[in-house]
Amino acid sequence: MKRRHLLSLLLAFGSSLLLTVSCGPASEPTANSPTTAPSGPPLVIGYSNWAGWWPWAIAEEEGLFAKNGINVQMKWFDGYLESLQALAAGQLDGNSQTLNDTIAFAGDAVKGEVAVLVNDNSAGNDKIIVTPDIKRVQDLKGKKVAVEEGVVDDFLLSLALEQAGMSRKDVQIVPLETGAAAAAFASGKVDAVGAFPPFWLTALKRPGSKELISSKEFPGAIPDLLVVTEKLVQEKPEQVQALVKTWFDIRDFMEKNPQKADEIMAKRAGVSLEELALFKEGTKFFTLEENLEAFSTGNSMKHMPFAAQKMADFMKGIGFIKTVPDLKPLLNDQFVQTLAKAPA
Image (cartoon, one colour):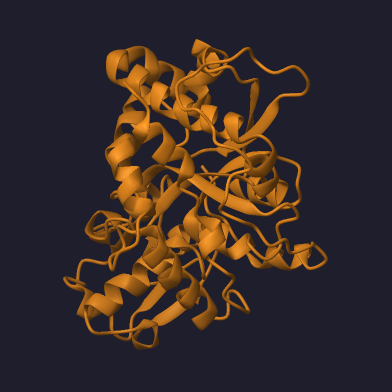
């Protein structure tokens, strides 16, 4: 379940063109008016192995895209990084990815990238796992902490340290890919690890190990998004609108048909129903109202403009990105706003 695996391969896109994107629509989309599915090639939307994105498989299985008048091919990626690269290279019309990765790839995207929907927030699925002697965040001082630098669990560690009046300089960062980091912790080579599923299951195999803190304590810190190209927003806003509406139709189906929905998602993810339940527990699916709040301005991590700035500053501060991109064009709430205003 490789997710958020963003290494120095960002440099591979050094020759990509940086486009200036705009939040303004090319035309006003309609929220609730299904149309005949357009002819021609389908929209290609990437997704990968994360609980908040598995529901897209339901739309394919249950014909929900066609119900909303769009022709969509959901493209599964075994490696999350490959989906990020594909969208940045212009090979996809949209992708399922985190806010921090969207920021990191903003300068390399050939066709521009725009977040139009919040699928979920990590609400416990990202964890800092520690040895028995570490009882509070302050006890991490001077300890070896394995994290994949610049990605979400490194950011989670940074937030936890900041809340405790500390910084990354107060710990010994051991930079490792997340799977290797969990293995290093399990074998006793480090004192703590930041990890997402399924890697924290490996970490917890170390006798006496425990969760110190998780993303549950930091609502809004790790949003998972539907990101589409700026070209799609400008040229086919009605199809973007239909994608957003389809997501909420999926959520409605999940509420009304929980067993069937779980079976579809477990099959797509290659996990048991028991494992599915475990990973869903740490996933906070967002309602339409919570989407509106997430896209709005504010002074907390629940507000993506605020969270994006904090993430960008963090990534620049540790040298993960060279410059902070223009963040305003990355977030476009017009489609959730249109849906919210539509008659029931």
